[in-house]
Amino acid sequence: MTVDDQKPLLDSPVGVDDEESMTKSKHLRIGKLALASLLLACFLANADESFILTTGSDVAAALDAPEYTSWLITSYNLGYTTALPLHGQLCDLTGPKRAILLALTLYGSGCIITGISGSIHVALAGRVISGIGGSGMVELVSVLVNEMGSFHRVAVLRSYVTTSSIMGITCGAPLGALLTSYFGWQWAFLIHVPFAILCIGVVFFALHIEKPQSIIPTGETYGAIDTNKYGGAKLKQKSFDVAGLVFLMTAIVCLLGLIQVIPAQDMENRSTALITLGVACLACFVAFFINEAYVAQNPLIPLFLLKPHNLGLIYAVQVLTGVTNSASIPIVSDYWVTTRGFSAVEGAMCWAPSTFGFVVGSLITGRLIQSSGRYLLYTKIGIPLACSSFLLMLIRWTLYEPNMWEITYSLASSVGLGMILSSQFVALSAAKPEASAATSVTTFYLCQQIGFMAGVTSSRSLVRRAIESGLKATLGNNARSRELITQVLAHRRSLKFVPPHLQDTVRTTIQRSYYVPPAISIGSLLLILFLCFRQREAKST
Image (cartoon, rainbow, N blue to C red; front, side):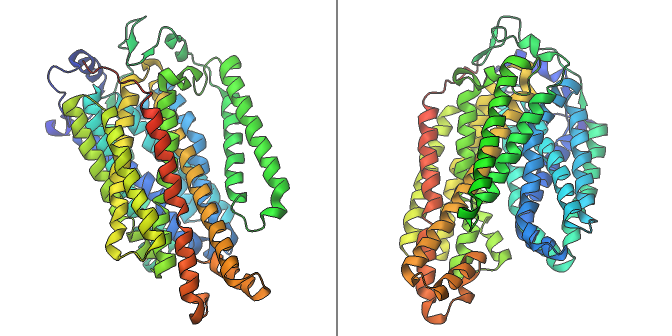
């Protein structure tokens, strides 16, 4: 390891939070090589989450279980979401280095299990294990970023994490389609294993961390949170909240079950399952909060973090940002494939403007926060930028015949969302209590995942219903029309099933039904704006 490899990537700004940065740097040494491996881990985890969107149907068909395509996606989200609080607890108890090594090992093991699986159930088990590891690879890297000095440095480093994550999301879909087409679906999973092993080796040898003592004197505040008031020292007890983890996992499993049931065609025949899952989900969430508030000695999510004057507003913004993003950005591919007949790979490439926009928004915001010391300002700038872009999508993509260049509307919306995400993470860094640093970050990402699932489910379900009702009004409700509507709803490239004399009518109806995603995103952004004006900005000096 050369001296240059051990040299910090960024120097702290002179005269800004010097004492805090010096205190933290005594406990954390991270060189360029170690940072590069952590960013690669973020890339892998996010690529894994997106490439299954293009390979899922091929994998399920190869395993003689085409009806399980959606569960290949859901199983990863199940492992990812339920493991978020677990990684925070492990990081607080054992330190981030061991937790990251465990996450990388689980991720690689899950990829191997899925890649060599001979049945759909084994493949699903591998996806769950990969999701558990993938969540730790992303969230624990953010925990390390939070500990690397003042939030001026955090802003820039966070932009690097966001960039690698977004590149993974965008590159994963076309790369997954390419590997599946030329080498077989197994290699779409197994290709991740050597990179995971490389990250394990680099993190083990190049990342040096000592478990830090709290840098905040007893009774003093950090950002907006008084850690003494809420008993920060008590959060370091060694007991593990098993009951809280069980309640939370059960609630999330029920929530994912609802996500699978709600978009179903035979909704009327599944009312019993819908009610059962809804009641169980609500009951488990209530039990979880009661356990966290009154029973658990060392709760998974300390409830004082959720209070509005602490991190509650930041977490609420993350839920809404997840809804905003997932309601529209993933649907961009579906829109062009369905209305213009793009192939799956061409549709995946439609994510490119969104990726570039996220990268630009994140990097620019990180640099601006580093130089100005302000962060809420850039949330307020990002909201109208994204909102105006979604408004253009709502008008031009649904009421008119859009040109190919108008796909770039998603670029401006992603720049705005990148600004919101980066500035809100810096808000978290500025306001977090040191005693629950890892838990505060993992809760941040848990809120994003909940928003993501809610957004993508509601958006796809409402678009489907809008298409169905529009086609029934246009084509009628006779047996032949119902059969045609069923075929249209079952395939993204559905126009090939439509008789030539009806194709323009059907395409126009489908196109106008895509008003739903940008409308959801605009509504969520307006709620974010309201919450943003209620946030307080911690002073940087």
